[in-house]
Amino acid sequence: MASKYVIPILYETYLVVIKNSVGSRLFRNFYANVRGKKTDIMQHGALSCAFFVSSILAMFKLIGEFHGTVDGTAKDLKQSGWKLITKPRTGCILVWGKIVSDKKNSHKHIGFYIGNRKAISNNSKLGQPVIHHWTFGAKNGKPKRKIEAIYWHKKLNQRK
Image 1 (cartoon, rainbow, N blue to C red):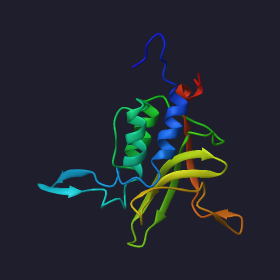
Image 2 (cartoon, helix red, strand yellow):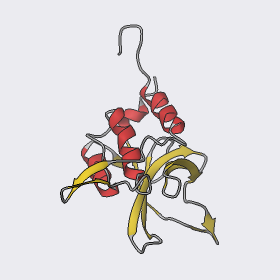
Image 3 (cartoon, rainbow, N blue to C red):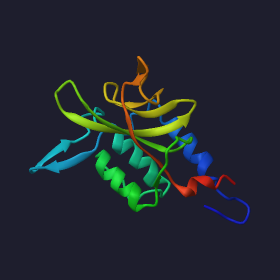
Image 4 (tube, one colour):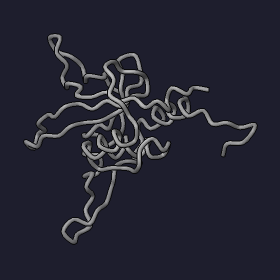
């Protein structure tokens, strides 16, 4: 697509794709063969956070492929040149620590930081990406969900 006259701007396009994903049902289903049976391993969007994040990153060639788990996505982030940082930057990846769900299952969560203490990640109840507070809101000064890792890629520094 790039030519002498048209040069894509990765960072701006990456951010707008993330923001335009809010409300999308695109990342709701991911089928796999599980013990010989076709299974929607995203459970109709309830477990789609890693699929959402990794699909966008794969689209921009910022990781190797899309993933169905946070751990698989985090491993690919490290292998693809993403570095841990201490303060969030607009466009970085946030990994939240494990919480126990209603079904007594524990799981991590992953999403994008979009600035102004806001993040976009998949909402398990709605089965689609939503904008929310980057710590899911705080009570008594403690975040509802602790941020375990913040990742940044140097390719996002190129804004021209």
